[in-house]
Length: 93
Image (cartoon, rainbow, N blue to C red; front, side):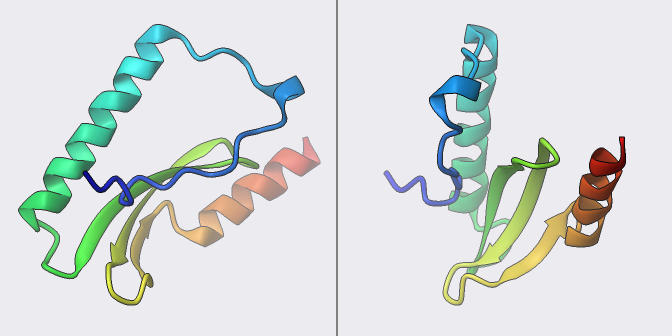
């Protein structure tokens, strides 16, 4: 089964990683399954797929619709400019 629709970034260094609670792991598994089902249904179009990832610097979830052929981002929530603003606000505080 292809899970390429759920992007995973490199893990954080071991010193900064914290154990993930079992409930959160279960929620992640449900999210992965839901993404697989949406992508299988081609609800977003034949050439598009839904992806989720987490921005490390802002610690925000990112939802993207990606073109399967070109790998271009068709749509993203939140947009990049919002992530950059959140990153700047974090630096200033």
